[in-house]
Image (cartoon, rainbow, N blue to C red):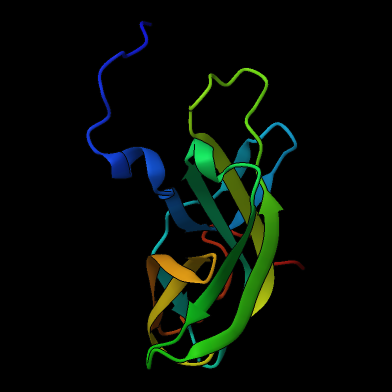
Length: 166
């Protein structure tokens, strides 16, 4: 692999933080070596038999590309959930961080900053469109849309081919 010596597309491409990834999952875990482990990622539809509903786990993953000049400064990331009427729901995670270039980074190279969190017992009050929202330094940077729908419950008598106990 060769390294590019071309000039950047624009000054903004080397001076603005980018949200490389932002999505929902069943579970997300971050590791000290800057990896995210994701189970059941990138869904956008939540099905419940009744409302209000309880979502047992909601994982959220975000990866930021932080320009070199913004490293070694304090930052705040906040992730929240907006309901169908654009109201902010009581689901929020906030973290303060300071990123540093890795030992392997070349001078001026942007850094990838992964964040992962799994929330438990998230209340979904009604059917409709919800948005996960990512704020960085109090500026809204990205949203991820989820839709909650009501699906009928189907009563079953057991698994097909199951033998009843005698």
